[in-house]
Length: 391
Ligand SMILES: Cc1cc2nc3c(=O)[nH]c(=O)nc-3n(C[C@H](O)[C@H](O)[C@H](O)COP(=O)(O)OP(=O)(O)OC[C@H]3O[C@@H](n4cnc5c(N)ncnc54)[C@H](O)[C@@H]3O)c2cc1C
Image 1 (cartoon, protein in one colour):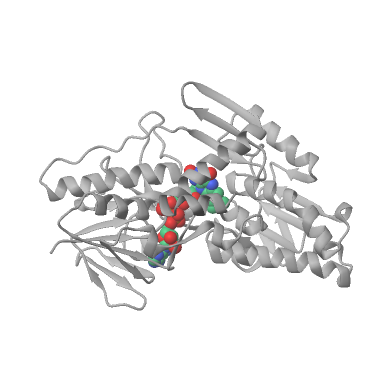
Image 2 (cartoon, protein in one colour; image 1 turned 90 degrees about the horizontal axis):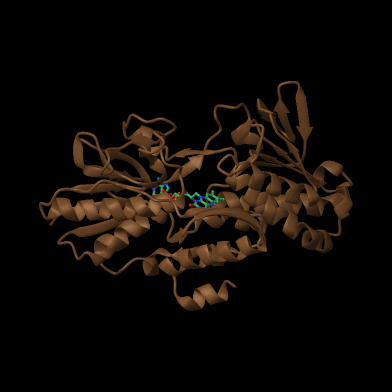
């Protein structure tokens, strides 16, 4: 029987496996994922700040996919693309006829010295929980250490993840101050960014609104400040040094390291795919989500790495596997963004919405929009009771 191997159970892989199962293809569908759960990557910043719990953003893989999908919990080490086999850490290799590689993103250090050893990334459940534990332990230690650096937090990068994390952090800090009995007025939060403004994907006015909001809540921005090294308790930018006992690294992501290990030619572990999302020279191999790069014909640049794009790619790739199996031509990927929403804590945010016009929104209305987006995403993998329980 034909085997379709789907690698990764994030937004792209999970959606593709579900679509293939619902299409009732005469094939065995195998989904390989590192953990026995799917997690909502778009809410990792909330887990790291402690405004959401693990159970709010993680859902058992077994119930997130239809029974027709065979789930293998293991880590993919590499793909033998010539021999059509996926090599796993603990199980025997899986032979496949069709491959959908959706292994997602990892933290990107850009080769900067000391990043891995001395800062905390936010790229999966384990790293988000480690960042949360570190933050709380460090803040709690102040009572006995009296060290001001225990109350200092530096966030590296001012893109989406950093700004959403800062929003949750400033929202939660008063509660943490009460719990661990530290003086709020002594807390120092810095955000260090190479570019001259935060949130590059947003219109200047909205980015300025977000900057003002976070400034009013105590965040100090250091823009036009490229990071050159991270040392224990220090972020270095050429001649300047910033000190803190909590350093969060959220400057950007790259694709899975399985990409170079499998011999793909890539840039930051993202492979440029054909317009039907297959790999050049191999019509049975598709790359979707953050491991792929698809050129947006309107800008000539790759689409951004977002959950929205990943889900649209999954729909297209699953339809193209079905087309291949039934001898029909494959279709081209096309994507129309419905906009971008950046939360600044659970209640406010900024958004550019492209739905029945172009809308630029800020404040509490965005909090409601973001909640609707998150609830809709959770509904894909869990039931209504879970969504209501999350509220
Ligand atoms: C804090 C944060 C907030 C974000 N907010 C937004 C937002 O508001 N809107 C938006 O559109 N996008 C947002 N993004 C981006 C979005 O999360 C990613 O673009 C999206 O998750 C990519 O989906 P994916 O399926 O390609 O990869 P992932 O979601 O990374 O899923 C990959 C899956 O593969 C598994 N895996 C990885 N390696 C292996 C391996 N070797 N073997 C087996 N399994 C493996 C992982 O466990 C995971 O289940 C945000 C990202 C972050 C970090």
